[in-house]
View 1 (cartoon, rainbow, N blue to C red):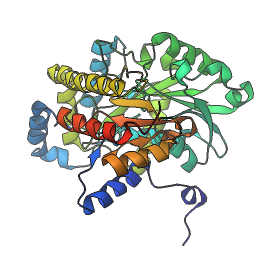
View 2 (cartoon, rainbow, N blue to C red):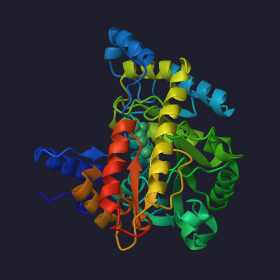
View 3 (cartoon, helix red, strand yellow):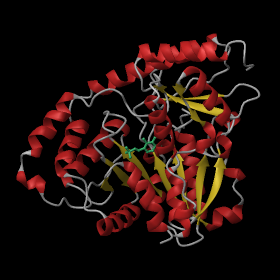
Length: 391
Ligand SMILES: *Cc1c(COP(=O)(O)O)cnc(C)c1O
């Protein structure tokens, strides 16, 4: 049986391919350092695990959860927004629990796009925006994220006939893969644009707590009028080292929250309640673990900046997220450089072209290995490139 057309056009997920390469190299007995996947290496804080341990014995949590999520969890999300951003949310109508934000990001396209509808997607960008689009039968219009624009899309460059046909716009700050951060002025411009063209803005903000040099990124929902036109996807994955737990949320526009919740209620059965209790503990509990997390990445980022500059690399230090977006040396493509680094240094980096055509000319490293391994990775990269490349 042949799969449908969108599936025929769907390559394996970027990181599934990279994992395959790592597995092959390890089989050959090579010591590979992966700076590829952005997955926190630190454990989930103990007080969160303890809450999970307690909740798992409560048989009320063994049954189907409500698909929109526990009101207690949604209230914890609303409290967190009030405390962190000064944003008021009605937990009953403006928050939906997600089984990790990736599922919500993919599902929103199915809930909103008819065949051929346009969705505005950043390039380079998290692959799920355009994949959700492709599977739902929508069309993607690329918004290039260029260094000279601070890796923000230029809204004026979107042709008005395209904007008029667009239903969704995806944006993501702090940004994966570029490490760029947006300010409130940019978000307010997005709100105006979305109002003009009647577009639902989907802001993806899982890195709001991962930032450097004391900067505290803003939420899209802080922008004036944001709730009239958009929702924010968020997650416990990065803030509390909980990628494996699969818990997040979408919050903001009431109608969009209802649509997404109704869609989900028909295809999944919600997030395991014990995990939601752990999520409540994460959001309501002591927050010093978040400071610790920032300190760890800050130290690693500073090492990466120093090591890259010492090699002669012209780099822009990320302001947020745990990624570093680095131009490839002259004469290389993203893919050829990533391959060279794997073969000659045993280090996995992600070719920028995996994030879209405007990612060509860059590669991404994730700061999710410890200091010693990172230093080792840079020692090896330095050896592999010294005298051989020109920046
Ligand atoms: C990690 C990440 C997510 C989501 O993670 P979940 O674990 O599914 O909540 C969403 N968007 C971007 C850009 C990410 O990097």
